Image (cartoon, rainbow, N blue to C red; front, top):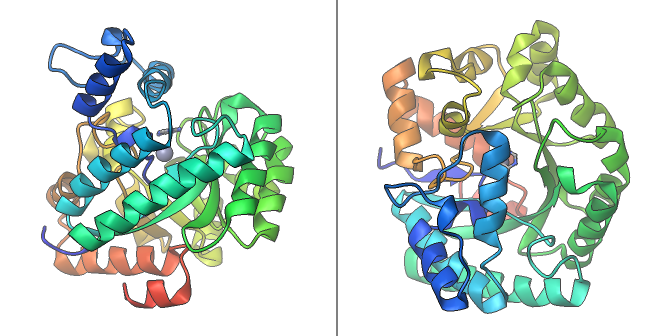
Length: 319
Ligand code: ADE
Ligand code: ZN
């Protein structure tokens, strides 16, 4: 599918090519061989294992220069998929340990690498500062402070990733309030590993504009109706859900049902090399499974462009 694509749910470290992580580990003398399978790709057993491998891979990225290199490699690959606008999750937990001065240095390096990629490949990138749910609410507050202090042209949103099965959503409200006051768009992972109650919690307690995944809202017709009525956008990553076992087969995935019910759905890759996917593959599988064609994908991209957290001029250029 050669259509220009808008991708809203993407983790910067989660898009790291395994070869780059292997090379960095070699340069740093770090032994991380256990995270790779026989095919050279990332290997894990389940979601908990995935999060652990993600954190080990990320641990070899040691400073702003490493993140500049990561950003360059990731954006070249993303642009090659026809993505013209990308929002990527960046975490102060991994970039400078939530120290504001260090965070600014990482961000400067990442944003500069994104500008270089924009000139070279035409891809426009914006960052969403992300707290990690299983690191707890105190670290989330520090991440939100980093987000609020650097909100602007590049940082346009605040989000929460990590293990949805851990912690109480309301405990993260302070962090999300701080980000909202700074004018940032809000999104949280929910409805991936937990059901409708978890989705309702991020709507009620965090007052998010978008939900990362959110697919398990499909289990509750009243919640589906609420999403359709309020226009909250789902950042759906079907290949991620299949690879991690949220659904056994593509034909079981609720994206088409949610869309038919009037919910605003968008399509993203989440962590492409971890899930052996690309934006092109996501589109191809959706086309095969649900019979979607160019018009459907163009409509999905319009929904995504309208839901982008960037400024109006940048958004208008996508529509
Ligand atoms: N971090 C990276 N990918 C994630 C996912 N699919 N769910 C929760 N946290 C994540
Ligand atoms: Zn995600």
